[in-house]
Length: 244
Length: 244
Image (cartoon, chains in turn yellow, blue):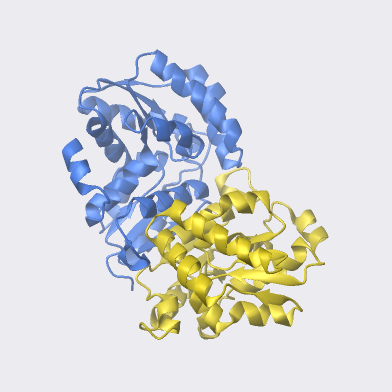
């Protein structure tokens, strides 16, 4: 049995899980393999689409999410991370079923907004329509005192949802164009920071993330940083503490 | 239990395993999550260094490799892939202990050389010193009729081994400079194709891989393609068949 391992409930989608593991490895303070965090990834990409379920167009992903949580607990994982924002609409059910603590990607991302700039008041959120409908970012951010700006129904229909489908079909460049327009519209409406609140979205927005590290919050990276904080393995603990 | 899943014995190193998952997802013929291959990754990055063991400087990784094989078999994985070339020095022990078939990264890479260009006679191999000492590429390639060109002892010492250590310490640019010189020296000695026979090496050589798709063999990608061939999920089955 792998001792003190991270459990990753992934496959939603497969590329987002790979991106999470790459960001976790790159952000780890390590000089050799053995200083990284051991992990087990349960990648059930056959989990029903989260947004389709929320919009009433498909079956619930919950049984398969719980099967993954059960698997990772049976493997004695010390903590669980789920690099899929929409899956967090079922967070309470998963956390209740888990002996291991389950990190929360929305909380990790919301906290990063504050670390980035304590003066920020208005936060834009790009997410799946499912995550938006369930209000998980709105609730967390409003509780922290932020005003939340989300894409309009038209922008979900024409930009965000088709962009996420592009990623899942491996059309990265096509997705980037759509996400860039959607992000610019949030900025035009007054957003001071933008959360990429779907783990598919950062896959197509690395240039914008790289050039705007303190105003674009990559939820995949925020979750990786929460994992590193949990294990005390962050590359920049002093800096993170100074920012918070 | 996840049905018909790929088992991945990873963590060697962590970034290489993430790169493998990303290449697998990108090469899969899929328009949505559910059409990808379900998988379980057992990422034990605490597995002792393979090359250090082969050179007699450290403990054997075999017990931990076998623990991973046992875990993936207990999870009923249908087939196992190991995105670490050096770990294949213990391939026979792992394959013997596994109910599920274990794909062989060296065989996958050697076969890709032939698919790339049937006229190639001389193949350069960049690998860890451990993989080189154990001769696993030399044996496979010579059996197929290729002449093998490996780095000199000095190039292992000054370029290849330090470059791999750079990757494991997240110094990608520093690694790229070293690998590029080592690859150029193999070409100067007559290599017609070069296998990147360590899954850390492609992480720093994506530009060269992209511009030389038929003369640089990325062993990570070759293994991903072998997985897709196993599952019949390749994006380009017609092209692969035409090349072989």
